[in-house]
Length: 204
Image 1 (tube, rainbow, N blue to C red):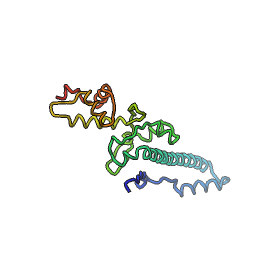
Image 2: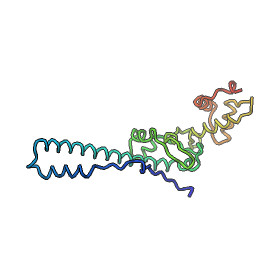
Image 3: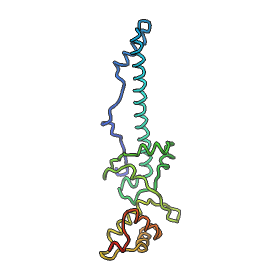
Image 4: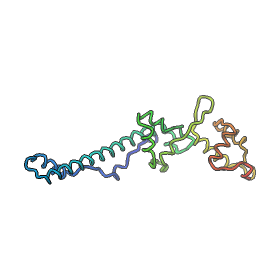
């Protein structure tokens, strides 16, 4: 149904790593006959044991990474379900790396590393994980909204303003307030500048 969300990791494209059984049997054979081992045999055994130890550590690290990725995505789904279903930036909830860390008990640095250069395939498109994160804006009535949602609404207002009659920052603030975003004129100016949109005088 529309309310069900699933984020499977692409396991089919990730090779399932394991240590060669022949290699393990060879090492075990050396261990079972310590008295008959030559010096070169002992050196080979030490070398093989070192390689096996490193291989196991590498495999464990990949498994840990997959587990961390799964925990992170489950938390993102929980916190951003409305946006995931709609694809509308105005439905994004304010969310920081710390929010994920608090829910998963993972370090913020770990969350940051997991989300770097990663993408999620959604029913309506593919987006970078960093898109889920946005700062919060306090509306003043005990609620917070995502700055991404405000900027989306601001962009739409400016894109649809009358030809030759651009809206001033004061007018934009008034229109945003009607849309449920009670932000000050100076905040409109700040977001407009962050988006690279010139003042109304330069948009004529």
